[in-house]
Image (cartoon, rainbow, N blue to C red; front, side, top):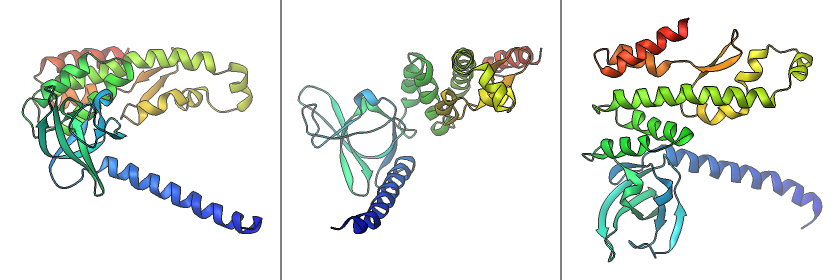
Length: 240
């Protein structure tokens, strides 16, 4: 193939690759049909296998937050329970039961809460976000909202220190943009923003803070819960 023909061909290939990535991303966010909806919460166990056993051929590793449809289950010879799952219209396989939670399965909200409590930093926020988005009727939701909000505020302090080290004050002055815009555009915030965490910049203390949306929700939706009392304290403290 001649060079000028290759030049015409490359953009089309790139477009196709980007299109397939977009389709795959959409498929992960949209629950597939054909069974009980479940969500990947523990990527350490989320190997999709061709057969229901730990020695089964690995087909892919599913990312946290991916939706699947559960069609059945089977216990392996060594006692591990596997779910038969549909991942996309063209992909299905077997995954270890503990990698998933399902809003339709009794007790899975409690199991996910235990996992959230033993998680750290970003993992805690990401798993709490899965709970809040999918277990909307759970009685444990106020507790998870408080954990999510506290974790976001704790992380705001660490992100403030990171941004302070990486952002050069002289460069910021030369750039001419407001100081707070550099902090709020700091790339370290990106993955937290994708989990619904929004930060604000405290001009007086020159640091990032969690915007308190989770605390606001606790006060307005669950006003009589013990978690709402703590949320009120946090909101009052943020006004000082």
